[in-house]
Length: 518
Image (cartoon, rainbow, N blue to C red; front, side):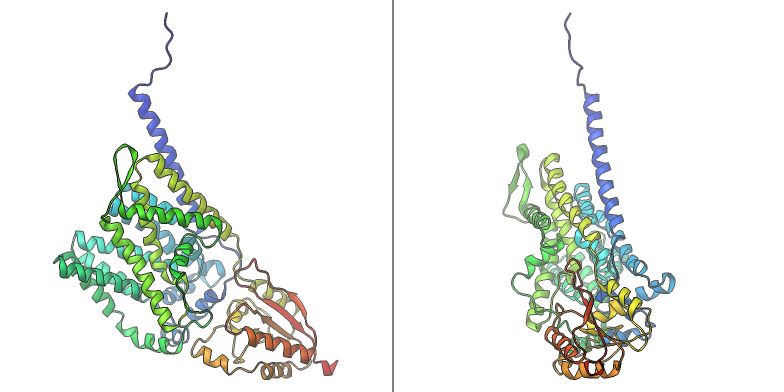
């Protein structure tokens, strides 16, 4: 008798493949589900930009244009936030939830976009990468327009493909609507529309592509719809800006890609390197025989166009900001972040074996998810700590001063005490920062005179100074306010000290009666 082991027939092989696929499907669903949950988790109160958004959105539709002239943004997000608060209120969770909705809607859109570019493999990799993208998750829990901007960019890329492939009036109208919505959401959409328009113009002229002509028509229609807002844009460009940071330098492109992949920590650096390798493979890599990737001298058509749109808008934005000496932040190019991840997904799909594809995707998932979990528990602002002390200890007649005024919006919205609040250097209300001619206004500020007037205003009552020396460009002025209040009222108590674990740090000084009254 001959003993033989169990036979491995075709049915056993098929069952084993099904089990592998099932486990892969479970993992994909779990990652995407985790990304959805993370889009609604955040700690701590609103920080400056979020609080400013809420304060502006409380204006009526008729008053929004005038309010935004003092801020420097277009109106669509603020109009949506206004409607949202009318129904759900202005609590921290409520106003942040609004950003989570377009962040979740981006997931099915990116699946569809990825499939149209490179099939199911690209669609699945795209949704996994976007679901656990630290950049996407961060702005899904922030009361700002960036998750909406990302959704519109993905929808716009999908609309361009539809216009080229189907050429229907519906597809053309959809691209026009997305173009107008993006321009009314953030001014940096101008760069994306410009790059896309230049590409479509080239295709229409050199290749006589009818799809390009229709796409170009849609972009023109969407841009024309933005014309009624142009007078306010011109006023903002002349009088408002971002004086809190220097203009970008030569490292801004790589810094932005790092930010898209999670920031400057070690996990993000690993993710960025893997992502850049995937981008190279997406552009010039092709599957070869025997499980190899062959590098070619020709670029893959759709991934290269997608990357050109993403990085073209980024480069032009940086050049313009350098020329205008304007501050730059990677979040301004949120429209390009999702497109970049789709190109990364294209590179993963080129890898010739399932094991290699899963390994590269797994490295990115582990790195990105670890950053997301860290960010979810990182509090945004110390405003809650400061407001809690003031609510408990401040008394009628006390004066609360914010230096710089940028600490006013996140802190003042949390206060329930009836003390007088004002900001340096204008003595104005703290709910909103007025960015009109901001730099000129602070150049004429006088910390000594300001401190004297505040001390006189408080009289025998206490002065509470909410301050930070990390917020530019008022570092020296706020230091002068502190020194002059010390001269007038003595060494203060400091119930709240700067904690670097917060993104937005601040300290609180408590000054007693004037020294000549003690």
